[in-house]
Every structure is written in C-alpha cells, then in structure tokens.
Image (cartoon, rainbow, N blue to C red; front, side, top):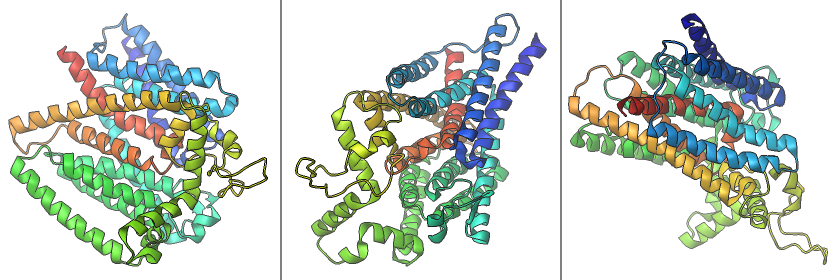
Length: 470
C-alpha cells in the first residue's frame, strides 16, 4: 500500500510539473493541438490525486488536516466555478465557452493538487524547477532576438509585424505575452533576492534571472511590460523589505527609489526605439509644451482611436446590454461585429459610426479585466475579485507570519525559502493584475497554469501550517 501511495504521489507530481514546465515551450499551448494534451494531462493527474486520497484512508501516510484557511480558499474557488459553469452551460457557442471555462477550471485543479497533494519537498523542487525554466525561457528569447531578430518562434516563422518592429517574442508569438512571462520570472527572482538569509548561490542565480528578464522585457518593447516594471517597483518598495529593521528598511527604500528614479529619467530622455513606442502612442512629441489639460485630452483621444481603445469601448458597450451576467463565456469574438466602439452610428439613416470595427477582428479584448466583465458580467467580476482578495489575504497572512518569525530571531541564518516563495507569489499577483488591465496574458494557457503553480506552492505551505496548528 505504501509503495502504491508513493507511486500515485510521484505520478501526480510528474504530470503537474510537466504541464507547468513544458506548456510555455509550445507557443504557450494557445493552439488546440497543444492546449488539449495538457488539459488531459491535468485530468490524468487529478485521477492519480483522487486515488491517493481514497487510498490514504487505508494507509499509514499522513493525511492533511482541515483548516479554516483551506476551507475558505477552496469554497471561494468553488463558488466562482459554479457560477462560471452555469454561464458556460447557457452559452451559444459551445467550443469558445468551453475553452473560457477550462481556463478557470484547470488552474484550480492544478492548484488544488499542489496545495493538498504535494509535500514540502515536492513544492520546493517544483519552485526551483520553475525558476530554472523561466530563466531558460528568458535566455532563449534574448539569444533568439540578438542573434536572429526573432525571425522565428521556435521552429515557426514569427509574425511579420513583430519582426518588422524588431520585438523579442521568445517562445510566444506575441512580444507582449513574452513580456508577461518575463514579469513572472522577475517577480520570483526578486522574491529570492529580497528574502533575508537565503543561500548566496540562490541570490546570485536570482540576480542573473532579474537581469535576463529585464533585458527580455526591454527587447520585447512592450509598453504594458514597461509600465508593469514601474508598478512592480512601487510594490517592492512598499512590502519588499518587511523582514528588515525599520531603519534599514527605510534606508533601502530611499536608496533604491533614488536609483530607480534616475534610471527612469535617463530612459525617458533616451531616444531608444522602445521609448519612441511610448511617445508615439500617447502623442508626446505633438503635445509636449502644451497645457496639462490639453495633454490629457490629447492622450485620451489617441487611446480611444487606438485598436485597444476601440476593443475596450466595444466590449463595454456589449456589457451594458447584459450588465448583470454578461454576454457569455468566450462570446466576445463572436459578438464583436455587433458592437461598434462608438455609439454615434445610425442604421436607419445609413450613418456609419466614427469608429467602425470591420478593419480587424478582435479575438480577445486585450484586457483580462474588461473581458471578464463583458463575458461573465458584474456578478462574475465580483466573485472573481472576492476570490482574488482571499488569495492575497492568505499570502499576506503568511508573509506577516514569516516576518514576525524573522524579526524574533533577527539573524542572518540560512532562510527556509518559504518567505521567498510567498513574496514571489505576491509580486506575481501584482504584475498579472496590473498588466491585465491592458493585455490578455491570462488568456494564455501556459501563463495561467504557471501562475496557478506560483500561487499554489506558498498557499499550500501557509494553509497546511495553519491546519497543523488548529
């Protein structure tokens, strides 16, 4: 029985690790012929996990205790998933609704297996493998761009638009999504760097990951990625030094904020192709020197006229038709032709709207938050924000517990790694939540599964520690 129990545990671990590690290397598993094998692998892993739970009743293996945090986390997910399934069952286009629902269901199944099924050794191994894998993804993206201008994405030709703009894409066809995966790499590496007492070799390796991820984001020329780095910097200054004594904490904040400010000023005044993308988007050269009010109005008008602005406007107009429950999972791309970005057209008079949407097709809204609101309605958004808030609460609870333990010891002994995991997960939540306002990173299956593992590993440590004390 013990041998079978061990086999099931290892089989589940292998399946989950394979999904998290391999999916970013096949174009983020975006296409169905890559997406479905990984989904099947998650369900196979769930079978092993379920058998393990059943057999645990007849074995001597320790069974995870129930705790309040566990129950709250699981119930918050189940409530949202129940609502998402109900909307999926009512959708008009089954295949698109199915994919949308699976992008919520599969990360939950992946995460629940890590929280309830992985022991601490397996969690630490997975975390280290993810760090190495993210470093490898970034290194490939940087080398592929510096050597071959990202003309190919793995063995496939890259998009001509991005090749012409000389933007790094890594293993993702879109440079913005490559930037998104590098933001996760940056978040995890910063978690290790900012944790007191971690092994010096791990800190050196994490510093290398930080450099590679920053270079990858800059080479991608992602405006969202650049703004996300600034936002992450603010989050780091706010909570990144909580383990240190107050005086040291504020000294580090002041020093790093000053250095970052100088770097940002230099970057803004350096006419790089990356900075030109920012200036062209907001019309900086045309508006420079004009009154602030005129600058704001001009920037707003450019945003409304942009492709993203039109997608946002059309999605919000669709949501207003069904504000409570939304238009249905995956229905954005199907109803896109029915909603012009601007409401000034008149069908009866034959007047076209100012911004018609027949020039391009929008498969995604390019804003995860707006698409969630459009397709799942106000109810879905509220339930998801509640779920997200509970996960952040658990992570912050674990972080403050680790901070208190470190301050009580106040030493530079080798850390246990848990604080680095928790901090990295909080940073990852921050960057994905922020970048998702202007892009759809969380429609990329590989990014979603990786994000689930990043959060589940420290959440598993926190809730299992809490259940042992209860």
